[in-house]
Length: 283
Image (tube, rainbow, N blue to C red; front, top):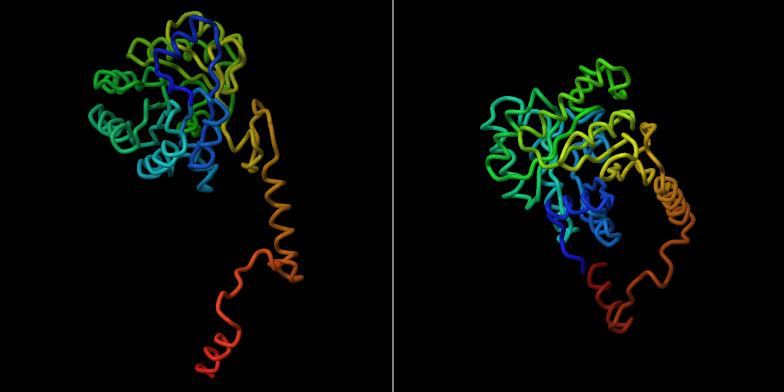
């Protein structure tokens, strides 16, 4: 079984120009599949709000939701680097609250790192969590928790003014002590520039190739989440169609009594006569 990677391994991979592949997962089975496939990292993203819990966005997701799912993922992938996603409201008030919630991830869910959204505006939170000895991943660009301010789930940094903001955010994240940065839904030209400016690993989710690795949401790439599909998603399977067809076949088999068959039932071990006597007692 492969050894679990550490943050130092990701720095070595960056130096060797070896790409990091990571994915979101929210439960035991998906995490176990990811580990078996050789995934470098797993993010237990607050995207679970939409992909698993059926919310319209990530805002309703709680610390309890995230920690519960993190625990399941850790059980499924004990030898994979796991990142817990700080949900909305868990780091938006005081630095102390941010540290306390980050600590909860490590203590209760056995995560290896945490991720939070934002750049300049959350620099003090990143610094406080990093000073507590916790590995922090930053996240800039399309940040779903602040999608309302961004006007929806839209690409960022398409023009010079907004690109400048993202460059400042990236620099602030690194300066505050984050050890990696996720860039979401920005042009690859901007991703490449940011990656060249920073010494920490820079990863992409919908931000092109010129960086240190790629993240994708499992529900998107497997065709499980059907509400919408971002432009940057490549579908590797259509699991929803497979599951739906299986359910349809099951419904048909039940209604036509094709299921269960003899092979699917347990037969009595005692004699039929003894069972008949038992039934007679209750007539």
